[in-house]
Image 1 (cartoon, rainbow, N blue to C red):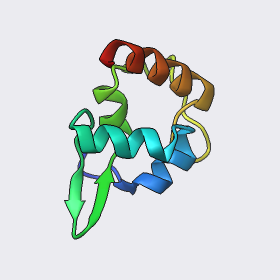
Image 2: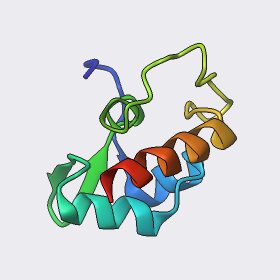
Image 3: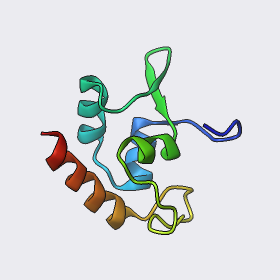
Image 4: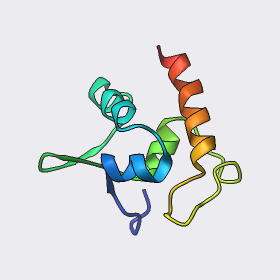
Length: 86
């Protein structure tokens, strides 16, 4: 993780990427997504999340104004990845 990269809460990541909070929380609880605990809050970076979900191409995941990634691409990739996990 880049030293200057910001960590976000689950709610912030859900808003930035379009991935549901339920999906994030369930996969964090199951151990599929790694987080950094800060007290009782789970913090994660967008780039770490994309790497853990197998989304590595920055050309495919274009940056948007929030510093997140293209929502439709992320949702499509996440649900394809979920089908492989379950």
